[in-house]
Amino acid sequence: MPSSGASWRAWQHGRVADRSEFSFDVGTRLDGGRHGRTGVISTPHGEIATPAFIPVGTKASVKAVLPETMREIGAQALLANAYHLYLQPGSDVVDEAGGLGKFMNWPGPTFTDSGGFQVMSLGVGFKKVLAMEAVGVRSDQVIAAGKERLATVDDDGVTFRSHLDGSKHRFTPEVSMGIQHQLGADIMFAFDELTTLMNTRGYQEKSLQRTHEWAQRCIDEHERLTAVRSHRPYQALFAVIQGAQYEDLRRKACRELETIRGSGGTEFDGYGIGGALEKHNLGTIVGWCCDELPEAKPRHMLGISEPEDMFTAIENGADTFDCVNPSRVARNAAIYVDEGRFNINTARFKRDFTPIDENCDCYTCANYTRAYLHHLFKAKEMLSATLCTIHNERFTIRLVDRIRASIEGGYFDEFKKEFLGQWRGRIKVPGE
Image 1: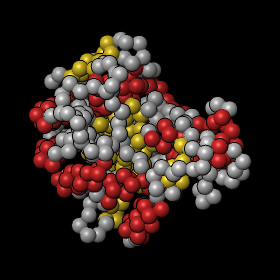
Image 2 (image 1 turned 135 degrees about the horizontal axis):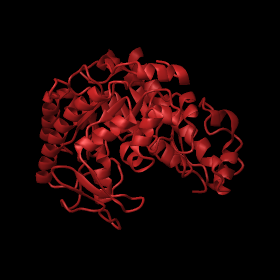
Image 3 (image 1 turned 45 degrees about the horizontal axis):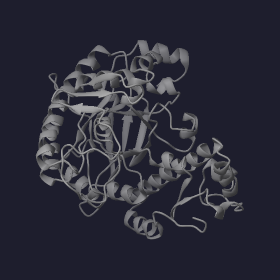
Image 4 (image 1 turned 45 degrees about the vertical axis):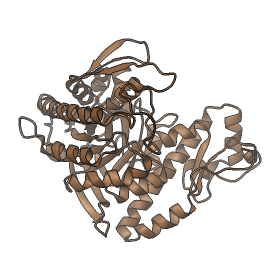
């Protein structure tokens, strides 16, 4: 696809959206009846070799890092947030710029989420984390301590107040589709309601039905907008699977979403595995879903990035996944290495003139020392976030590249055992 100014504009105005621009080809499968596999997702803006980690650039920017740098460290695609870009600068502005990729000077594939996560985070104040276990009182009025409810859900959509200025807004499936079509990502997600593990079983059932009805409305509107906006590249639409920790609800969601068609026969192009789930049940839940989902379509796992979770999700059938964690913890001085995560701003590293990781090929490890990074954090220099984010994102991307190579090479189980045998999660160092 043309990427330079004049040729881009000529291509953009002389084309017609073609659904064949999006496809997925399965490559090597794991043995033993497991759902894990490699593959290639083809989009109008390039290919994604799977399994793949998709870094998050919430507001059309991976915080502290240039888009060009993300390409250099091996990112195949980036994910932005529809809710945040709707509020600022406005999805119409991004559309006028030529779409998300052109707006942020990112030449590769892009994803946008639907805003469904904000239904949960604004409504109950919880961040997106994998729960260790579902404990505590079941309540459909649950809200995080010290938080105010900024969103309310009904069967038609969600009413919320902006976290920026308190202004009132309304999201429906049709509104979410309109915003995401304006943002122009290669892959977007149907509007859904994300529940918590503390919701009652009855509410999970009600929410699942609501998400199913919203999915039908999303695909109808997606089909309409694709025809109206035929001068733009084709955008793939993924359904989102809810059901929390309940096997019957997860399987039901998958089966029902697979049958949904637009009025013109449009199917979902892939599936997002989302919703509340327990960390120790991650593999089981992904496996339930992949038992039911069509083999020929890609599966995206929403919101994971810890190494043990990535191995588990990939082995059980996830093709792509995203998470803000590598960049978020980097801004707080937390560094990833093969043995685990440690804080670079502790006294131990003040005179440590070695790279973060001598085996890492990132720009930071090639040019800077632990002592310098320690100094940057202590001096509150913005460069600290840039250099540590480069390393953490490269670590995560490179690990998934290694997992993909291990599947293709037939040594996934050996690599998993070797890596997780040394991975300790959180490393305590002297001075902490």
